[in-house]
Length: 156
Image: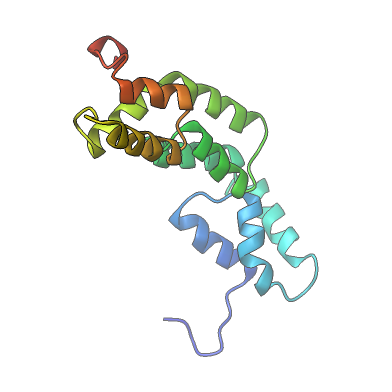
């Protein structure tokens, strides 16, 4: 598709990445740093894209939360956001909203994987480890595995 010897610009590479999903500025800097030939060129390209709202860290936070909230707990999502170089008010707000749904999300993940309460301590420990590695709060994990609050009233 590309002509032999053709090298896309940094802005072109960034736009290609952004066309696939939302990226934070920090992620784009990491991905594109190897392609920077002139110092400052990458920062300038990213500044232009950010000025035109092609790069928006708030959208990147929302995108990650929407993609991952159905499978992961708040702790894992917070870790992924930090890995992507995202922090600040948008992250704090997203994590606060996730806390409200932590129990119902943990119940759904547990139901998909196990469907039935544990019959012995080993099975209970396995279920708890599974939910904890998914990033759910220990108290929420205890309630889900024990069966507390599994009634319809919590599933809104």
